[in-house]
Image (tube, rainbow, N blue to C red):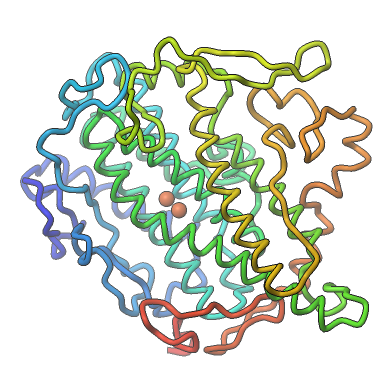
Length: 474
Ligand SMILES: [Fe+2]
Ligand SMILES: [Fe+2]
């Protein structure tokens, strides 16, 4: 029985009627201690005993799903929530567009669906692992709280995907759910599945860039899966998207506050030297944008992809806001791509269905461009002459048709020699990371902020900025 109300007293809060499915309940209750053990080993362990001002989902209603209060993270109620069923759910794209959506996994799509779900699921614990030590150098209690909010919600997203694996994929699904707790971000022997989720994120400039650019890839993947013909997946991801919006807010405003502060420090310094004032200079901010934006572009998959065509054709994965498009078959249309041919960039038309990864990447890039415009407005208002840009989608790629070539940030082909000579000016370097770690010292006093970042314009959920968002001495 699915309803808006959540069974909060159950060991696993849920609105999917777990109590009526004893076998599934038992399987998930067996997974629960393993999850908590993973959280204890790989989450923000050193802050487990600190009460954090967190929001917890207690219902999936528009105004009931976010409930705020101080909670110790291991006591957070990770639960399973699906958006209530729309009576007339249909397959939204591909050859069967308009037919009733699947409420069970169709045998012929079982492997593809499992792979889609496991790949999405794997990113959730990965990012918690990447961010596990950031509390030690938090620029304020406000920021620290936001970090932990993101962390517990990524944990909940893992629950959402593990529920699907357990409920719909039998033995294989349970095995996959176990393995999600065994892979480790950056571990050479058992790495996480996708590249960006194995990159170190060990300071706050990377954290903000990660939540801005990499969580934003998540938004677009989830939005495409929210259009899935597999109805339980569509409804899980719809609810995840409501939480994801906060992660994107943390990243976008975090970078905006750094940019604002850097412009102030630039003005204060007699030589306009931001680093001389202990701040983060604009070249370094640009290299960080270049680094995380491009690793995030890789997550969309190959530019020309028969998998993407199949996922679309079978209705497993739609485009961004597929339901608002006029046409859902994408047949007899083409997409124009830049490809490298004989050492030059040339245009090539590919069937639209094969370019679905690129279509989703376009939606993502447009969204990133909007954020860049906003940051540049901050610079303009601060009277700074600096401007930030997004690099070309061809630059610094590790996946897809551009990965075998070298490009400059403007997207021009360059030689390997030029790349070797210039790349330290283009993407985050070990020296950058060392500098950032040298200026990032924890600030745990309510209302105080590190020198390298401006305070936010307002606090969380109507609380003042100087509210004790994390109780460090409780
Ligand atoms: Fe997530
Ligand atoms: Fe997220």
